[in-house]
Length: 341
Image (cartoon, rainbow, N blue to C red; front, top):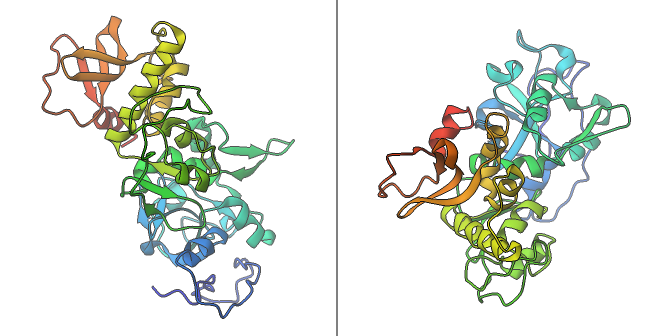
C-alpha cells in the first residue's frame, strides 16, 4: 500500500462512525522525507490493513519495525468500545482472526499523545501475557495500579530474535533497523567494562565506542551490558553473543576467586540477551542452573543441571558428539517445547 506523505492514513471505511480514532493533526512539511520518516511516523501511529503486517509469535512487524496494534474496526470479534485497546500479542482472541484496517505504533506514549481522546490502554488478555513475562521495566503504573506506559523498546529487545532477521543489528525507536558492520571495538580493550567491571583482554567483547555513544551508553562497555542497558536494540549474531558472554563469565570467576554456585541471578546476568526469555520461563519450572559448563569435549552447556544430568546447549555445534549420560536440548528445541519458538 502507499503512504501519503508518511502521515496517518484516514479510516478507509465510513467517516460517520463516532468511535473513529482521530489523531492530533501533524504539521505539514515540504522538506524531503529522511530515511527514518516512516519509522518516526509509526511511533505516533499509522493506519494499515492487517494484511500489511508480518505476523510473528510475539507481535507484528511492519517494514522491519516491531509494532503493536490498536484501533480495530468493530466486527463479530471486536466491539466498538475496543477501539482504544492496545494489542501486543497476535494470539490474543480479539485479533487472532481479525481481517481489516487497524492502527499500529511502536511507542505507547507517543500513540497516547496522538490519540488523547481514545484513552489507549492495554487489552486485558495482552496485559496478562505481559505480566507473565515478568520483565523488569516493561510496565509503568500510576498510584492506582493502572498501566500508564509499556516500554516497547524493552519488549522488542527481549524478543529481538523474533522481530529482526539481520544480524548484527542496531535499532532505535523512530529509526529504521540497520545492519552493523563493526559491532565490537576494533582494538583489544585495555579497560574494564564501566558497568560490570569485568576486564577481558580479547577481541569481540567490548562494544564499538561509536555504537555505544549512539546508544546513550558509556564508551567503555561490554556487549552483555550494552544489550541490557541501551535505549536501543543491539543484536549480535548468536555465536558472537555467546563468545562475549563466556568471556565475561570467565572474568567474573576471576573476580570472585571461584566458580559461583548454581543461581538464576547469575544466569540472568551472564547469558546473552537472546537467552533471557528462556531463562525467565525455566525459572518457573526448574531449580537454578550452573552456566557455561563443559559436559563433553567441544560441548558447552549454556545452562546445566549436573545433579539431574540435564543441559541446554546453543543451536550451532551440531557436529559435536553429545554425552550419552546427559539429557541435552538445543536452545531452539526447548523453546519450541515451552511455546517460545
